[in-house]
Length: 172
Image 1: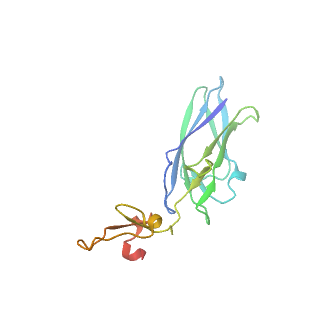
Image 2: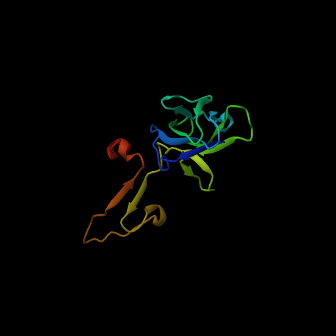
Image 3: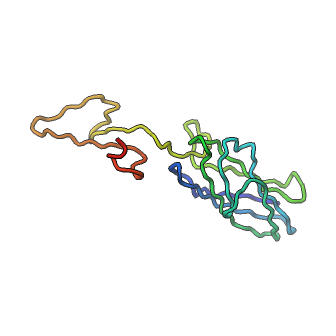
């Protein structure tokens, strides 16, 4: 019987040019040696997210031969598709190579949950809103603030998630 496990090493935030890395563990928990087929379920990837397994494109199935009780670990890399910043999770399937439909294991690739709890693959939009905040409140919430005449300066923080890519001068 095949077992597919995904170690979601990629939980978190990713910029558009960053890759997500997932560690897959393929196991044969049956009593006999078995040929196993690992494949992406293409219908769950209509947005064209790029998958590669151990450095090679992962578009169709890959076969593995495992002894009883054996396992193999593989690295799956996910790159953003050509248009969107958020995609549905992608299903992977590990099945017996002998065609026994009762011997199937599936798992989902995702790095975030959206506001409804749905598992998604999400990259940070490269043009997010810039947020101005003071040490006491957000200007978005308050829309105004008081400056003490005795201290005619105001500490402002400008937050933008692409700060690592350029300076404030370049972002303005």
